[in-house]
Length: 405
Image (cartoon, rainbow, N blue to C red):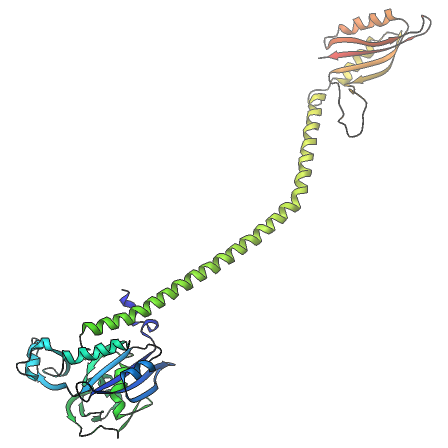
């Protein structure tokens, strides 16, 4: 799952432990270990341990770093043999141990020339028992190699024709091990400067094992073992789940922060708009009042007849011409008020009405004049509102209302 992530530093990690495990007997072994870490684009040795146990290594590895083992000592056999592209693993094993069966051994191959290679073998029961102990101690043994061939990446950096390791003296030619001789005792005398790091000969294989975490080997493949593969997958999956889970957590955290910032932005805009609405509400109310006043005035103008051709002067002239000498007009109102004007009340008019007030010598003269006015086509009706005359010697006061069409 998500295997492409295995090559990323976040998943693979910036530190690892390289271990050389040396079998003294079938049930006894010695460990030499180094912790390597990338610091400012350089690989440095953080810690070194010599002659420790698996239990001690498990306690030391508090960070749960991946561990790369290179196994040597008793029970491991190395031999340079002939091969070609069609040579099978069983044939290689037979050149090392005649009559041996492949199902009983783990086999590792390291090329020397186009037709020669080093073959390293270890019994499956021996390595399986060791792997079981790895699992018991919860050690992430992600890769296992045999012998000193893990030095593939270190040989070009050392640039020595002869390299000593814990158990072997290696003859090197063209960056390849062409001869391997066992030492009578554990070598501790040589020291090698590898890109600024000083590594003793007995630490060289442990250093090379740890270095394979950062610089993958091209020619040498690790031992193929289902148990080791399962441990390696467990290590990478654990880191992937942590990294992916943390990434998802960060994503949702940033999403939440973004939503909060967006909400605050919209809230600020909303508050600003609410304030503007509140500030402009009085203008909206004033606009409503003005619109109502406009409607009233438009209705007034419409009912007053001002939108049509004005006949006010015509009506006044006709009434004046028809008035006899016996009648004196005192007041003439066209579209008179319905009632007296009062504060806080609308002004109401009697449209299409003409009110006349004046004095007349007798009621007969008034009636005669009313009949004359009724003859005009624009007159629809005439009502005598009042007529008051104290005696025949005094003029009578009258008030009449003319309805016009």
